[in-house]
Image 1: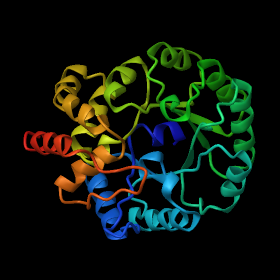
Image 2: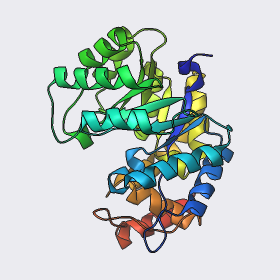
Image 3: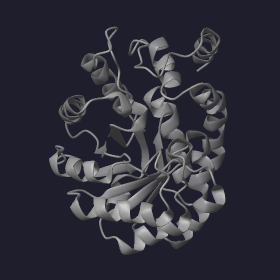
Image 4: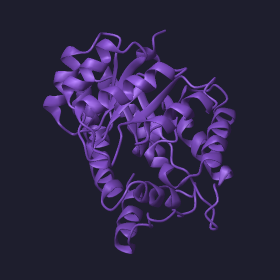
Length: 294
C-alpha cells in the first residue's frame, strides 16, 4: 500500500498535555491518544506545532515520540514532526530521532528567516537526502512568515525522490488547485485547515492533518470520510455543525483553544507553557456552551 493510501483521511496533530507544574503529562497524553483512535482517525502526528514543540526541549521531544509509539502500539500509523529554521540542526535530528516506527516525517517550512523559494527548495532537498523516512512538506505561512508557492511544491514533488507529500495550510484555494493539478499521482496532498478541509477535498485533496480531531475526532473524521466518498450532502451537514467549533478553536490561539475544549471534556488539564496562555474567560464560556450542543 502506498503512503498516499495509508495517510488518506484524517490525521491528528496531537496536543502535548502538561501537569499543573508544566511537566509533560503522559497519563493525559495517553488519554488523548486513546480518545482520537477510538474516534476513528486514520493516523496521528506527534511533535507538530499544535504540540507546543517550540517550548519542548530535546529530551522531552524524544520521550514524547517514544511514548507515542508505545501507546499507539501499531493501532494507526504515526507521523513525527521534525521542522524548524536551522537546517543543520534538523539534519542531525533526522539522523538521531527514533524513527523506525514512523511512517513519515512532517517538516514545517523554515520560519522567521523568511528564505527565498530557492532557499526553501534547498532546505527540503537537504532534509530529504538524509531522512530515513519520507518527508511531508508543511506550508503554513501564517506561522512561518513565508508562503511556499505552488511552483516550489511542484518542483520538490517532481525532483526530490524522498519527498512524498504536503500538508498545505496556506489558505489559498488557487494555489491548492495548482498543486493538485501538477504533482505526481502518488504525491499525498492534505489540508492543514480544518475549516477548509471539505472544500479542499472536493478539489482533490486526500484528507487533512487536523487540530479539531483532538477534541471531536468522531464527528470530524466521519465528515472527512464522507467527503472522500463524494457524499458532500452528508459531509456538509456534519461540517455545518462544526463551523462554530472551527471559529472557537482558533479565535485566540492554537493550541489554547483545543486545550480549553479538552479540559471541558475531562481529558486534560488546561495548562500551557509561556508564551501561550489559556483562552480568556469569555471564550472559555463560549466553548463550554458549544460543547453542550454537540
